Image (cartoon, rainbow, N blue to C red; front, side):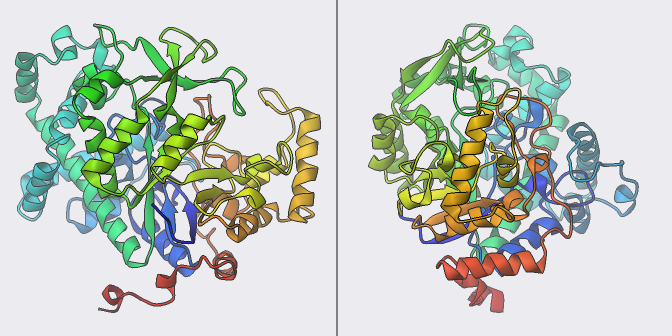
Length: 519
């Protein structure tokens, strides 16, 4: 699928400012969409939108279909009459610029319980929409709501630690749980209704401004998820629901011992036997939620790094082939043309390239990786191709300013000599003195021949390592960065728009209002 020449910003909604401890789908999200439009941008890329589990990572969610209820806006709930002014009058002391997930979870859970109580006491206004949502989401919602209700009833422990009858989804045990936990199950469904109600309103607003939403599908799902619990035969598990092998990647740029993700791996033979129905529904659901989708770890559709389940690092894994061509053929036959971006970073072999190119999926290039070798490096702009999506960096990278100012240290895969060599090469290549290295990077990707260019908001703001979103292979302090209100100045907007116009990427809808906007 060919993408038009365009540009945009990578920002997960949790990173938006606001008074409730975490970014959400309320006023700040609409203000950011307005900023994108004013800046001539056409794309807003987010991380996975699912309900986060252990470590609050959006790449380890309780469901591949459900939404993250932390993103539900209390202000919009108040506008719907589900909360009162008093409900939002006394807030916890939230840290500025970071998310304290423990405090936020407690606050948001309390708010959602109040909203549900309001709905149950007077459901008339929202009940038809809620009932319609439940009907349209029946393929996943019932299982997810029961999973979350059971998890709450078990004090949050993983599903494979529940009673054996529940672990194995025996019908009698599930029927008893549904009866006993009926109110909790309805609450979970209602929370999902609220998330999708708010998300689709934001998506519609963005689309009317010519802004498309890029979502993210992690190739793997979390072990402790409704997906694995209700579909154990689709994964390589033992009889107790424990993964026999787990996912990760071998030693690479980010980690000398590889990355041990711990996700269960797919039983591809079983998936092929039913025509990949679970995958088809997953992609269908995601493409109803966003306009384009990046598939994380695309190389896993050619072969996955399988690590023995009990290992502590990813070093002893082995590559095992996957039926990617059969999978994407089935998805294409079911859904038509697929607006998919293939995350093809790292060591990519010819079979991965053939799979990507055979379906016309654009791959990714990262400017920050471009200075680690020589002018033949494919991450340098003069080697880009039109049918690519290029970034200054991603959520897994240090910020551009942080990378440029970095020094070799404990845990780094770069020596002091290599760091200095890369910095000198960078300055020479960009014809820069380094005073505004983030703008040098932005200009380079926007000026490139690649059709699609995306910049993390941290780079647009010129922030240092303290604004990094994620440090791979670590579990502390990730995913918590937020930008501060007022950071998106008119000067930054004007400068980004000027570059976008100069290099033929400006959002035309930002110049000519759509008919819907004029009505």
